[in-house]
Amino acid sequence: MADPTGSEQRLPAAVRRYLDNAATSWPKPPEVVAAWEHAGRVIGAAAGRATYREAIEADAIRTRCRAAVARLLGDVDPQRVAFPAGGTLGLNMAIHGLLGAGDHVIATAADHNATLRPLTWLADRGVIELSIVPCDGAGRVDPDTVVRSWRPATRLVTCSHASNVTGAVQDAQALGRIAHDRDGLFLLDAAQSLGQIACTADGCDADLIVAPSHKWLLGPAGTGILWARPGIDLDPLIQGGTGSASDSLAMPDQFTDRMEAGTPDLPALAGLLAAIGWLASQSIDTIGQHGRRLAAAAAARLGDIGGVRVIGPHAVSHDADGGEGIAGIVSFTVEGYDPAEVAVLLEQLAGVQVRSGFHCAACIHAQLGTQSGGTVRASFGPFNTDDDIDAIVAAVQKLR
Image (tube, rainbow, N blue to C red):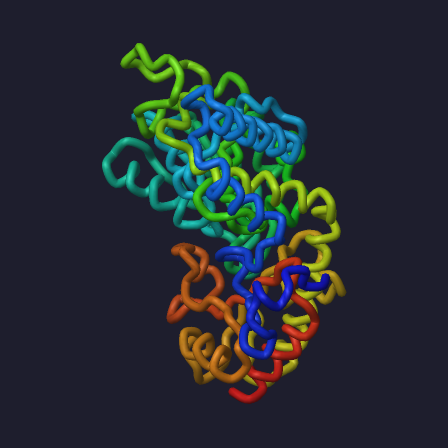
C-alpha cells in the first residue's frame, strides 16, 4: 500500500523506515491527524459536560465513536463500549473490576504484561490463584492445556489474541468455548489483532474485549476500548465525575458512565473515529493481508541469511501471505549480537526502526529460547512497502 501522508508529514524513506507498528502504528492516516487536530483546535470542549454548541458536538463525536467500535466488534450494544485511557488501563479495569477473593484465573505464557502483571499483583497478595499455561515455540497455546488447568474455582480465562512477540494468533473461539462450557468467562486482549485480523465478540466467543487505539486501529494514543457483554458487572477501578447523576456520591449504574470517570480525551476519540472509518474504507482484510505478506517475505529472506534465526510461526510457515494464523509481525535474532545492538545498528545502517528486547512479554521467551536478550521485532503496517524489506535485509546482511 502506498504512503498517503505526503512528504511534509514523513521523513524521506532513506532516513526513516518505521517497522515498529506493533508498539504504535505510524504514520497515521491523514484523516486521523486532521480529526485529532480539529477536536483540539476548534471544538475544545469536554464531552457530556455542558449544553453549549461545542460541548454537544464533543458528545456527538464520543457517541459516534462508540457506535463505530460496536460495529467493528460485530454489531454489539454501543452502551457496553467504554473508553479507558488505553489498553493497559482497560485490562486493569476488567481484571480488578471482575475478580474477587478465591477466584482462579488461567492466563497464557504468550500474554502481554498488561494482563499478566495485574493478575500477578492479585495473586501475590492472595486475592486470586493464577495458572499460566505454556505456549509452543511459535507462541501458540494448545487449548487442551486450559482444560487440564481448569479448577472448580476458575472464573476467568485470558489470552492475547495475537502474540506481540511472534505474531502467532490464538484460537480464541476454542478458548472461549472452553470457558463457557464450564461457566467461566473469557477476556480477550485484542491489542495486536483488532484492526488487522477479524475480531468480533461472537467470532471470538469473548465476554470482554480490550484494545488500545494507537496500535493496529491506527488511532491516536490516549484512549482505548473496553467492551463487556450485557450482564457482566465490573466494579469501577476509578471513581469520580462522569457528567451524569452529579447530585449523587455513588457511581452511576450505566456501564459507560461507570467505566468512564474523568474527562475523556476528545481529540483521541475523534482520531479513533476517523481511524475506524479509514479502516472500513480500506478493508481490514486487505490491510491484514498486506501486513502478513510483508512479514512473511521479510521472514523468508532474513531466514536465508547465515546466523539469523527467525522465531515463531514464520519459521515453519512458508505461505506467501504468512498464513491466516500470523499477524504482520516477525521476530529474529542475529548470531554474535545482542538484540539491542541489532536495533541500534539497523537504524544507523539503513534508517530501519525496530524494537528489541522482551517486548513487555515476560513469560513467552522461556518458550522461545530467547531469555538472554529477547528478540529483534519488525512489525509491518499498512504504509510499509517491499522497499522496507529490502532495507532491513540489506542491513542485516551487512552485520553478517
